[in-house]
Length: 483
Image (cartoon, rainbow, N blue to C red; front, top):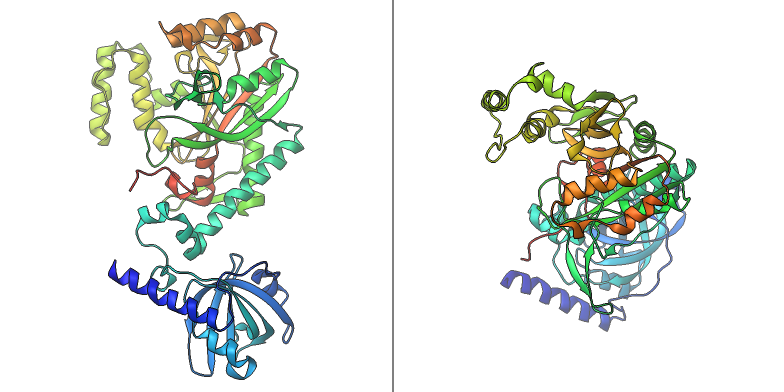
């Protein structure tokens, strides 16, 4: 702490000295060119005006060098004693790493071939009072990078590029859906009742209405109301909130894309996935072959993607007779498979085939689905808002789209029968019937067209397309325990 205070005091002294020389430490509007544009249009001798943060400073008597970064590129500035006024050259000596300056001068190529600007005049734009990370190599502490993202962005070009990629991905997603005739809508985030998913909500109180409210866990039920109203192709990009755990693939506040298409079904949603993701690979990333995770495993996003039934995956691993076995035999087989694969299956409290099979799928199968895969025909207990398969009412006409061993998004043939929907919601709610959204049922009773719907976790999609293995690396300000 003493060292930190020493650095800060030295910077404050430099700031006061700059003010005595007539340099305001915190400047105003400064029109300039992006460094990337300067480099692209480089022509010897042309005068340019640039701005950026000081990343390096080399003081060498009458000729001094520094590197600035404006977020588009880095560029070398040369401060020569005979090119600057006496005051400007003297003031240069008071600069510190992290300061933001504006400079103008002529483009010049050094003997070593480095494109540079010989500064004729410069101004102070912002004095940094805090010492940046050692040699501007960035924050070494991963937790600190998340807590102080502004410093991480300042010092780490890779981090900054990742979030530019995220922004471009959102833009191209919108453009793709607009091109397919979808319109973007906004539905309430503050809701009287949680619905559209089975999750614990964040709760609050609306003082003006004296009413209990929750932050939404999903926008689904409101989007379906729009289909009833005749808005046939809609999507929403927004935040959902679930008051649950945090791990490498879950954050309680997360960004979701939900899409609904009237007169469609599950296969309509598969077509959207097989169109949208290659489009994002082409326009944002530049390749459909994406290295992912620590091992840089190559994920191939060229469609068509694999389609396989949930039960077939289970039988491939556990044996063709799995669903004919009694529960005791299934449990013994699962324990043996867990031991064989050194996987910790959580079997305590599991008392039926449905949950045991899901534990086997969740721990032993899904993680090994590395390439893009539509897992179809799931048990109806898992998806109460979907329609049953026409050939088997015990299964629902849905998919889970899995890539890199994680679910990226579910897609459904949506339930539009209000009587069947009520039964499913009552079964899910149990004795707590207040959880049933009666207005949603009422909307369905007005008639909702056959519909396909899907929800894509944007944070996980960014993880995939940028090769990150942790969700906090793709969220600018992830939730952290208070320091």
